[in-house]
Amino acid sequence: MTIPQHIAIIMDGNGRWAKQRGLPRTAGHKKGAETLKKILKYAREKGVSVVTLFAFSSENWNRPKEEVDTLMDLFRSYLKNDVQALIKQGIRISFIGNRQKFASDIKEQMDKIEAETKNLTAFHVVLALSYGARDDIVLAVQKITERVQQGILLPADITGKMISDSLSTAGIVEPDLVIRTSGEERISNFLLWELAYAELYFTPVYWPDFNELEFDKALASYQKRQRRFGGLDPVK
Ligand code: IPE
Ligand code: IPE
Ligand code: MG
Image 1 (cartoon, protein in one colour):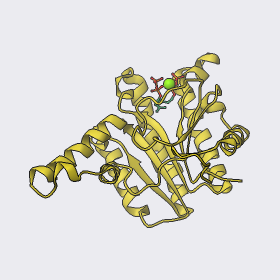
Image 2 (image 1 turned 45 degrees about the vertical axis):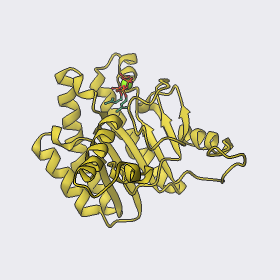
Image 3 (image 1 turned 90 degrees about the vertical axis):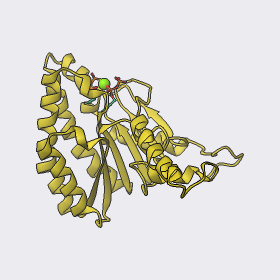
Image 4 (image 1 turned 120 degrees about the vertical axis):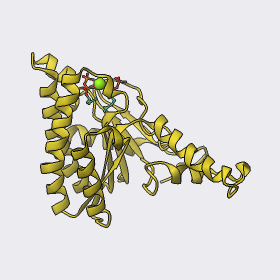
């Protein structure tokens, strides 16, 4: 059975999960962090090589301050505890998104973790934090047009590969499968360029309730897809 090499997950529904139980939204985020731990372990066991997680979007900064503050504390604790456990297992950790917006302690942690794990190969976890695909594309365009302005590059010589290589996901294989929990069926500014030919899987399950069984359902759905990439024959 084909296992996707790269799975990207939009971990959505934490707030509604909590509301359903009469709990504050932040309780959903805490439970969501536990789900993440479980799913990363399972994805690795299944033979997936890369998992990208949408944990905080560039638009999520617009949420009420209390919620943003709690999420920041959760990231701090995640980077300090869970991520260290992943590093001990030889797992590479990368971050995509606008790091400048984070408090300096978080930013420093991110830089340190990334540098420390860049040569680890057991598995690759990509955390999308303060990430927005449009911002990422804008930055890529700025990088490329600088070279045009310097006279090193002609506009007509700009290629798709150059754009891919200028995004924060440069060097990472494109996602084969996207999973979005919580019943929302949209991309919400996640990896717009990279998802051109990804298979999409939506489930009504809220992220805190997502588990190994639900992950298997997503894999089973993926295995039934025929990926043609615009051609006529399914590509394995
Ligand atoms: C996803 O859950 C986590 C973040 C966006 C930080 P939400 O917080 O969006 O939960 P819902 O969608 O409101 O239920
Ligand atoms: C997308 O969820 C971002 C993350 C899961 C981190 P949102 O809850 O922010 O997206 P919308 O607002 O429903 O589109
Ligand atoms: Mg949401």
